Length: 198
Ligand code: NI
Image (cartoon, rainbow, N blue to C red; front, side, top):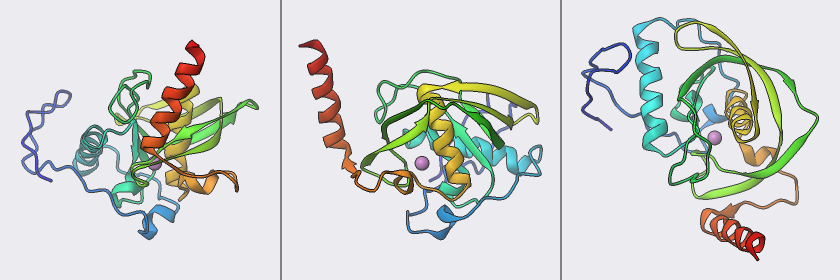
């Protein structure tokens, strides 16, 4: 999808052929592959791809998106937690490009919660994730970053990291757990909010 675009707010480059990449379908084998290390972070092509993936994340109302989801099997994802139509209660953070990430430690405490995925449109499923994680990655400026993430942001990181390993969240669900539609998910959430108020 072609979009017209103002000069980039950070590097002031005007991309003549900036476009929002399409999501590949769930059955595409790229989603099941282990992705390759990124070795050319500073190249104009890679910087443009990072911008396009960020545009895609916003366009598709994601709180994260990984390069393999648009058919590029490289170890790069975007984290962009913030309230949107798909996740109205998501905590706000600066959009970040995460490159060649490593999860160094995972908390023993886990949380089971619903998550969704742009590659599994229309559904949510319960997945057990570490409550907090210590991670290392390289950002788009080539700087090494060490960080600790908790709760929903830690969940996003683990979900997107899985995409780089060829893992889609339904593969992490308990055997007896079911995917539910987003409509049913919203009914559940509204129901539990009502229960808390009563
Ligand atoms: Ni996903």
